[in-house]
Image 1 (cartoon, rainbow, N blue to C red):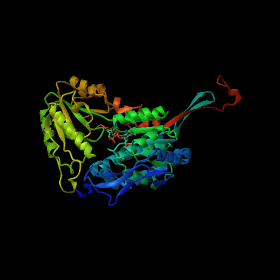
Image 2: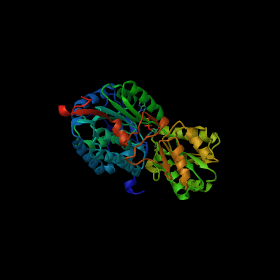
Image 3: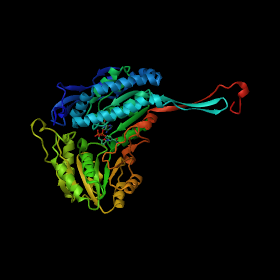
Image 4: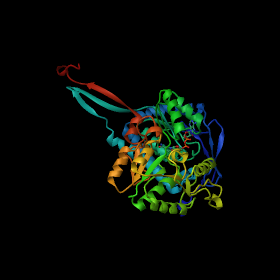
Length: 495
Ligand code: NAD
């Protein structure tokens, strides 16, 4: 591993503070140590936020947010251009912060920040695209649409993308003129300090962007707060559902993205190299801790040569160098138990990552090597539950129809992919799969902007996607204005 790929830790203990009205302050709740997924060592501290902390941030956002929303879009965009410059200048530090607290490789941290910057670039383009519409609807009468911000809005984000997922929300919400209150994951709160620093360097007025740290208490307070107009959430399905229910009960607009169990259909005619490398990257990238990871391989017919090749590559991967760490010891214990249960249910543990263990300073980290479970039963937990680790469950099926029937039975609906050389098969999967994002010969089918990101079914509560034009629609409202400036002689039935 090159030096730039060796994860760096900030030398001092970092405190994840709240940002309200431009001032950093400790949340009023308990402090908790943050442990490195890489080493098990303490790398920082986070303070829980109370409802009073949330209220302070919201109150401090109201007036600056109103002034920010009244600026012309082009003026707000200038600040966001400088935000992009600040993020790019700080890319290496951001990548290492993400890696240090989430367990990702620094290269994965960098890729996540760059994907977030892609959303920011989409937001920057709005000044040229989003000019509303104006139509002469009758003699002397025009109708026009004006896009307006909602006011103070909030975002709640998961541990596994400490920079990218917030950057799905923050650039669009701010560019369209809102004040934004961010509740980062309580497991990965440190990168929020760097993102806030980027916005400060860009010249965003104090109060327009706030951070409240913590967990359920802070999230509940955001859901309930009458001063927050809209809330976006990304995390696990049970929490997404609860947050959606609570936020909408208090009259908010809400969009809550949940967990996933993504399927890859592997056809016998697939290109062996593209399939083996694509599937391996899908379930081992970010140590399998991403909502777009494929964790069920529906192996159609005889695909054994591809599976054997993939297993050999998986066995050769070195944890701590080729693949990062799991977020916590709890996660490691949960995954070890899930693998043991799958074996008990009759699966063949073809590649067993449970004993993977680097030495030296990484000995105290949370490690699980790539794991392949073959001949998993379709209805078993390994085939149905989101495990969120580098574990691939291979389910053998006789036909494409049988594969699509299993995919259709999943309550989730984030992503589905097919590896094939047949255009007809690819079309069939794209048409029939019950997922919001489909890949053909791509294991992680994340749409590139301006195509928006979002799943179906239990992977999303609320309507629309979180980025792209749907993101613009979510964070704004349209005012329809009908104007008549006609002289009296031009009056008609609308007079
Ligand atoms: P999580 O649901 O535990 O936490 C998400 C956020 O909710 C965090 O900010 C956390 O502090 C907060 N939270 C936790 N428990 C809460 C509760 N009881 N009430 C209110 N708030 C609570 O998720 P996680 O473990 O941080 O992230 C992993 C999950 O996120 C996986 O299920 C993954 O699939 C999902 N995810 C989904 C997407 C997507 O786009 N659909 C993207 C990334 C991650």
